[in-house]
Length: 332
Image (tube, rainbow, N blue to C red):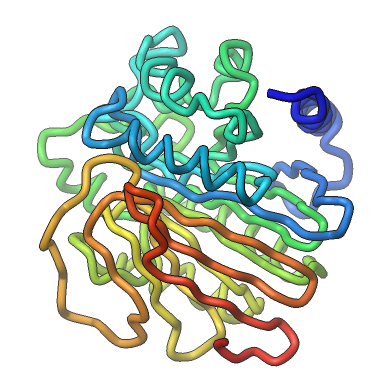
């Protein structure tokens, strides 16, 4: 990594450390971080989910293409949509899977930027607290994973939401799995508090682009389909607060669906390693613009007036490109 990249990474890490130490007058209770945009006011980043398999199931190949695209776009950071380590998260903060599935896989210079991550359901099946531990940042300074938080990137605010506790069946029918619910004494109270904090943060946001990231899909035609708890509880808040994009993983595919009742675009990037070929849930296909059941990732480029979303396959080929103007609000 060049001197500029090292300096940028160091500055970003310093800002993170300062925010952790002095959260200040954060909106509501969600912890906030600042990530500077480029000097021209633009922002670019990659989104990948459901990846941590020690390089297997083409994880390494996806990482290679992410590195090339990251260099082409001069990305500012990477977002992980969860299920960071398979099959059952990390056992503790010393688990070798952290380096085997993260540090040693995403080695390209362009990927030596801050990674902002949420937990997925597979992460909760291990020691969820381990992924949240500051100790992992001593091993790899790129790593930042919290339950729910906000990244202020100047022209955009990105609201990370812990969606796993929303799914009731994880509590009532765990199918032999054990979930680490430490810190979630009451599911009902946890969800209510999170939604209150999120609504407060969203309503107080004055940025150009509002992005919400969670592990589970609100809308999907993949294996899991729509997450009904999110459709009922989370979606109305996003619609009421003019959110532009909801980004998620969980379904091991790439997809783009437009909301029927608002400008929200639902973007699934959960194809970082193992994919589910031919596994399509066909109950609700309204608004589907793109679906791909193979491996890959997504890029996002933001300016004060435009956004470009691009999906790539495991070979780095462009599968779907979508542009939107904030001023005109129509597809290009």
